[in-house]
Image (cartoon, rainbow, N blue to C red; front, side, top):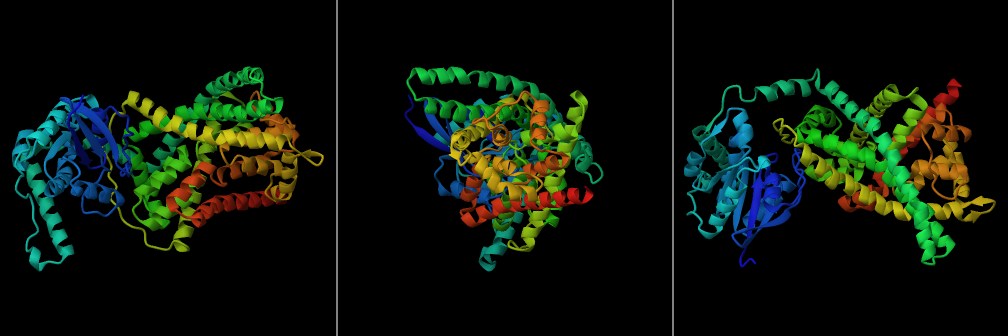
Length: 624
């Protein structure tokens, strides 16, 4: 039983292992990433030490307390509020000078402060040595060495925090001050103070750190491959293509097995509902509508997500994703957008809603809005199954390895087109409704690190896969009921589903599609994964979502209903470019606080998809 409770603020630059320290102390599985500014709000956790409770507040990663961004404002305001009983600053032993800049600023704002020099294992591998005692004597605060990813130093951190709140050292003298403060303007005084802090950080680092001449040679060699003008983009495309190929080749069998398992439970569920006395029509609505839709979404989404997200997280954990932002920064700058939009765009490949939320890392409101409005131009995980199925059926001949390689190459080409469209629309927005000059920002390229496979698997499955899957299931259940009602309610000589498809048929014809295809996309608004089953339900008039044995059978059904290569091309284009799903729309509304901007975010990709489909349809017509 605890008697006392203390609050500890946790501060540090991005990519120093701050969230790993948080997780290690609190046993919470916070997401740790190499994307600058990934954490945009405080997280809280607690641990008990010597019978006392300590609440740890994980502040956003920031380079300075001179606030220029939302992250810096959050960190500065909390540290200066005096709410915390002590502040723990986490620093990177491999680049300590830059980290000491923040440490000195924190020391000027609050007391007591404990400095944790983390990543000593990485520093050792590079031959870098840090004299912790010399640094502690110079700063006048406790300095703890740690390699928290390996579990080293956590006990020492707990003891240092315990001593800091119970027996704090006397406040150290000011490490830097503004000269001639009375004769300088506030801006000039701030610039002078920053300069003094930087000089003091360099003095401390020169006295306590020894860096070999060739300490960072390996990172420089890798960066010549991953970020140079000659090889950066080609290697990026190859890695992305490899991720797609592994996802496509690896997801087929588990998806089929999961589908069989879940659909085999449908009739037992119907029997259970019958035994408890529910009417037949209610039984059908639950089993053929709600359950069947949810089972489809799970069987289609889970296997590729369980492969794609860990692979993507491995690239993130290794420090590669910031290199993607570096490679694409110039493209986004030319489009009048923010370089960090490349990071939020990459997040959109997993889930557009997550990508929209990730746009908070962009400081400029104008550029943040551009990133939000264009995030849905890249296909999310929910659109991948439909896109992969269309590409494989109509464009990848044969089977086995050759087919999956062709599918992966075509999918990569589609992704390149999506990125190009994102840049084009960003350029259009920056020249019209969102005029402005692109802002500059600091993009840190963290050191390359060996990914922690176990943590990556747990983190990607729990934090991403199950989170996105749970959200999709939440919206798929009511959608399943609506689809079942439309497939079973009569409207004239056919069902309501057929009547709506007939109404949309003229527009579909102009786009090289048909009314049923457009209706399938509209009913897939809650979850993109159900587009194909809704399409089959309409074509076969089954009254419930229809499964198929494989792509060969699916292709035969589509061909019987008038599909051609022409139709497949237009359907693939509209799969790539159409309105975002319901979850993403709700997220856009929450992030922008505007129905108008949300409507524009829906209209932009939809208009692009419709226009491209019409142009392709016209081209096919002229060639024919």
